[in-house]
Length: 302
Image 1 (cartoon, one colour):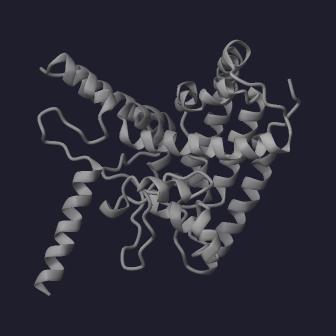
Image 2: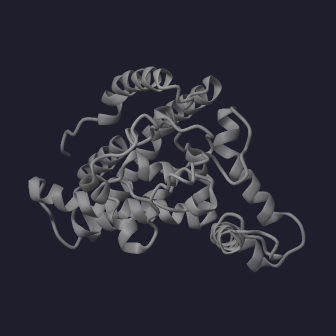
Image 3: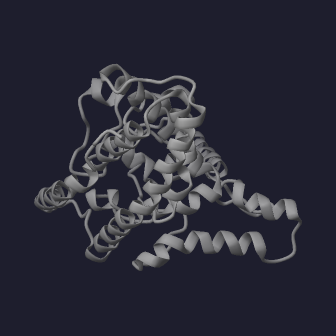
């Protein structure tokens, strides 16, 4: 077992210093990105994620080793070129995990935590799930099957998470064009956190924005459409426990309550957020189409 460090724990002092610096910069430029209760809720969610992460990572490591020891197709050495391959493989896995987390409600139930803040700052990056670590690892199971060592995979997943910390800010407008073309940036990720119809379910990238461009989910930040952060229907609570589990409760009520067929009950777990069995719900594609039609009508009348 390679002795890789837990870089997330080592990064905690950096997180604190970076948030203090961001608070200073945004206050100086009169950018109101922080709100006390909201920031403390995000930090509490992050601390809970770290604590529960010891259990979830133990489970993930066990399952990765189960696949690696018994079913791997190749044995890839722990060296620079295998880490280079893993960088792309992990980022590809993250894209699909992230995209499905917006398109399938049982994954959204844990991921919604990260989108529940109506503010956008470095503390928002810490607003992490308490439940997702126990099942979202399935998107990475193909990596030990290929022959990547489980310790390598967990290290690269941590590197990806660290990268994504700095993009949760309004203190940076745009990076150089070549950087914006290849990498995920604050501008790209602000779009992802927007509840504006045109921004819904866009820019799922981890490190490389190229996946969104390749698979048709890229949306640039528009100067004429200021990002409105949060959810289509905000949860209006600072309670970390409610933030962590409210969507699980709502999904359970939708699936198990009322009179509906077994198929419809199952669909409440696997259809996109907003879906209703009676056709009364609206998913992000519906909201986006309505918005685009209204904009088109306004332009035709002007």
